Length: 138
Image 1 (cartoon, rainbow, N blue to C red):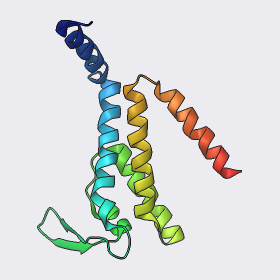
Image 2: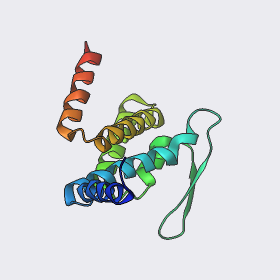
Image 3: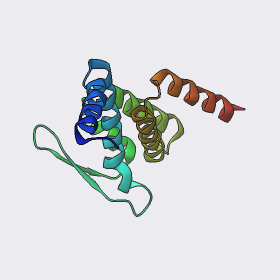
Image 4: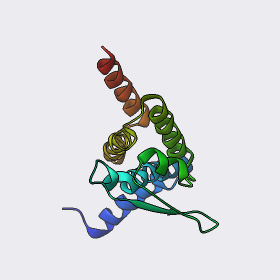
C-alpha cells in the first residue's frame, strides 16, 4: 500500500514533465484546440446556436457559420490558428463542413491527450495518425 507522501511525490514527478517547455507547450496547444471545439460545438446544424463576437473596437458580429467564426476569432495559439486557417481554406474550396471538421479534430486531440498522459511518446501518436490517414486514403 502506497503512503500519502509516495503518491504526492509521484504526482510531482508527473507534473514536472508537463511543466517543461515542450510538455507545457504541447498541453497549451491541446487546450487551445479543445477550446476552439467548445466554442463552435453547439453551432452545428440548422438548429445551432448563434455566436456573438466582439471586436477590439467594440463592433458586434453575430453568426453561426463556422468558417466566419474561425476567421473572425483572434486566435493566439499558433497550432490552433493553423488549424483554423486550414479549416477555413477547406470551407472555401468545398463549401461546407468547417464545424464538423473542427469537432472531429477536437475529439482527436482529446484522445491524444489521454495517451500523452499515459506516457505515450508524441512521435508514436503521429505515426498512428499517419497510419490511419493512409488507411482512409485506400
